[in-house]
Image (cartoon, rainbow over all chains, first blue to last red; front, side):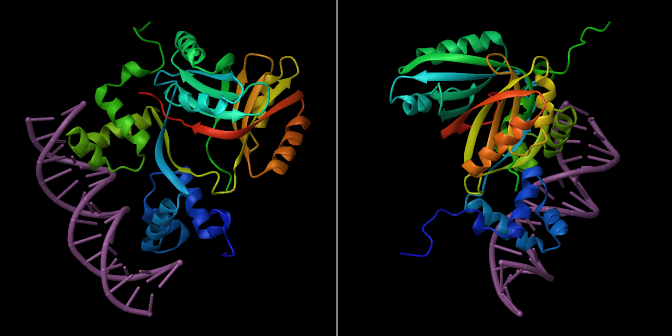
Length: 158
Length: 158
DNA sequence: AATGAAAGCTTAACGCC
DNA sequence: GGCGTTAAGCTTTCATT
């Protein structure tokens, strides 16, 4: 046996990597040469480290974050799904097909699966709840509509 | 009065803009010249349209999406916060200071504010719940821990 | 609104330390 | 692991339509 069978983790990146991740997390389109300037390093080095961070899976992807209101998806709701005994995982997986469902979590508590959904209007929400309720293994749903979303973030506090 | 007092919305972008947004939403670091190739247009045109989409606010930002597990933030929980009457908005705003809280929504239903939090471990969650409970106007909290997160997305279904 | 052309900059690969 | 160099490719501006 080796001294480390654990999956790669925070211990496997150094301060420079962490700084690179912080910068890319805030500005995903920044030039590597600009990162090199800020960290006072050669841009070949930044290029190499960034490639490693991507290959090792620390960086999953790069995305433009769009404005949901301006693009016609102003309504957010959280749907608590109660599933039949032992069927929560299966339900969760099948719900993943629906593009209106942004988040799917199996959770502790009164419900088994918690969904975050985003839709254009209340009618679309009604349709979505009907769709969810029709899935095999779904016993019932309880929905909390967001009246105001103060914060929606994905950043990690590195 | 003009014929359009509404905020800018989906009607204000054309098919080309929508295609650009779809591409950037999936690959935030793609070269403008590559978008131009895919859409069979000049790269100066893509540059101009992309700048407009940024300036008009359709594109909020560009981000690298990092792997939370690998970076030491494996625990997700949803915290339902019950606030004193009329104090939900104030509570929501003050909670926004805490970097462990990724999402803050004022919601309908039994609780007033719903939080999505991400922390390194259960101890950090305990500390966070203590912090939340100490805020003025917070009456009580109920927490659902995520056992498995099947999907965490921000993409819009354009 | 879209374009081609051109200047300056960036990326990605290589060899060297 | 980090760096400088370099060729290829990219961004950005601008005059033109």
